[in-house]
Length: 120
Image 1 (cartoon, rainbow, N blue to C red):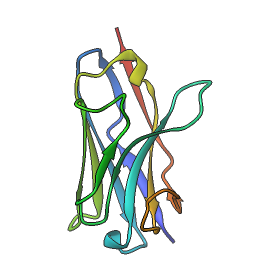
Image 2: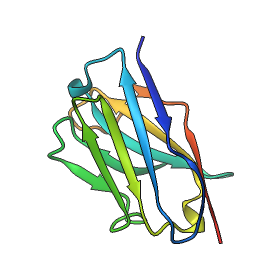
Image 3: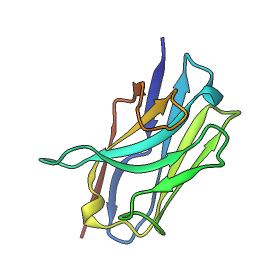
Image 4: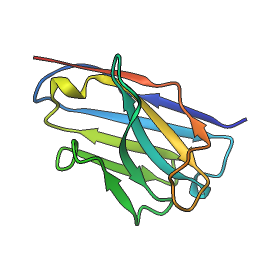
């Protein structure tokens, strides 16, 4: 059974930092391209960041470029999202996804989400 478990969310003041983690079990981690998404109340889920299986391809949403950094540790089967200079508009439930597709445009597995709240 494949499981993705996010952790590291919480409440932080604007300008602060958080690091999210996403641990994969039940599947070979290096088979998977990985991504972060988020969903704010009343809005659709949106793409945040992508990292390929070996870390050689990375993409970010324009809204987080220069503030967020995605990384992965293929020994620990874990992906990370370092979030700096957080803004209230970053408030959302953050989800990680695992994609078995080379493009990484479709995701096969999802985590349950972790809440990030940024206060003024």
